Image (cartoon, rainbow over all chains, first blue to last red; front, side, top):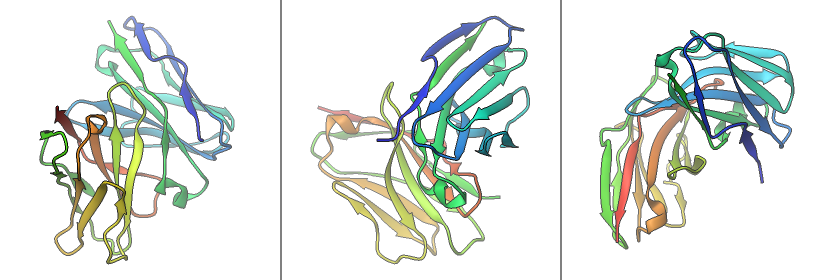
Length: 115
Length: 113
């Protein structure tokens, strides 16, 4: 079975802190994604990566950056956390190419609170 | 731009009964896929069912089935013989060949024992 893990289930940070959210998948997937989930807004794509060191902006990239140095790991970085970044963050992966999007595998999510 | 609309923020169903969750979408594409994802409380989101737009036959997966009306751009999910484990957020999603899935805002389903 595909396994997508995220480094923390719950995280509390202070405004202005630099925050790293880590995601690891064990199925050798080329595609990896970071979503933000907010009540009443559904899932919104922040960034995705279709290969090592490759990244593309999604719908809401402002205030975020990403890093993909190894195939299995995709990191989301909040350079200076703000209270409006309090949210649930979901990582996902899929097999290569756009056709891989037909089935994404999700991690358990990280609930981030910024005080 | 494609949009996916789930008009029911919350729904409830009695255990063993049938419930239908609604989803409509807007697209100018002729070839695309539609999905229903399930997110149980504090658990990972999983794919429930997938429908290819060029297929006339509605997809089914055990107790889960869809009613796909391409002309009406409607894609509803029917859950038969509802079980307590069906309680979850359900998201409808659309894909038309890019790297992006477009999700609806979700429907929270409660199952009443």
